[in-house]
Length: 348
Image (cartoon, rainbow, N blue to C red; front, side, top):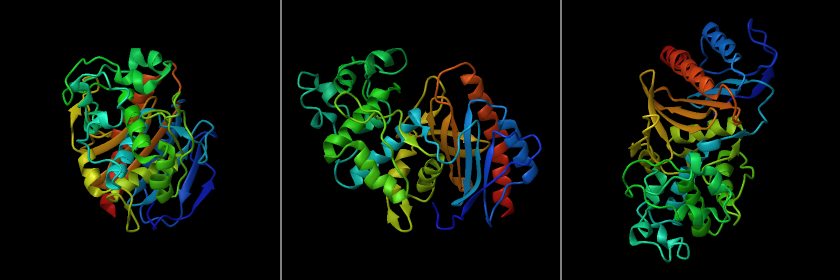
């Protein structure tokens, strides 16, 4: 977070139309603020979404909006679900910059000699980049295959045993198994667990905590799902990328890695969204946007042209209304929130 960040204090919601289940936190003496009437209308609309948990907005390093819904508060941890894949990408970039990994072109056979001992040359030649961009060519472990994978005795071996359904470096095959392999690579390359590495080189510089999350039967932290952060910590992740990877002159992740991560590498055949190294890409109300996206409605939106970060968390649980929740949330963010942020930036 920018050193310009002001102290936060809790205030009671008194805006007409905002119910008692909403907690608002305001930033004192901020240089920017959203139009109050439009902001209040947005919050009132969001209170109608029972799955919503939080909405935070920062502009130019200042946290200007912080709202919690349906019983959570600033201390509540959010399950990032697949937005965890974005954090795994950041950790891979840090591991490369620190010399633990050679480059994204490094092949995975160096890290899985036993698991790939009898594998084809094509499978041994899958690269770190293929895993980052969901282009390994291997059959997915997600969707209908997810339960069988996470119930297996060895998640790494199971993911690597999948048959080819495409060519490495070809079309996008979204698979949490790919990012779990990245977690295993970080563990084997650094000699630290993924959590230890992430705590030391990402969370600690950001001034946040990286709580424990699930591990596979061999003790590898789940790569690409179920990581936990507070919404404020999620904002700091977005601001790190807005600020070119450095905090007060200390480089956490290189600006080169950020640029590489935000280059479109493939396109989802389902959402038609572009995908880089763990980041999704789209245009929100005319502004190029890079974002982490997790099941149920977990988002970190980074909008460089507005110097803005938007964080949204929602219930991570399956249930009725999940798709409608995501649709309504998207409409509010693109059609109402981004325009009011734009106007606040222009007025400044």
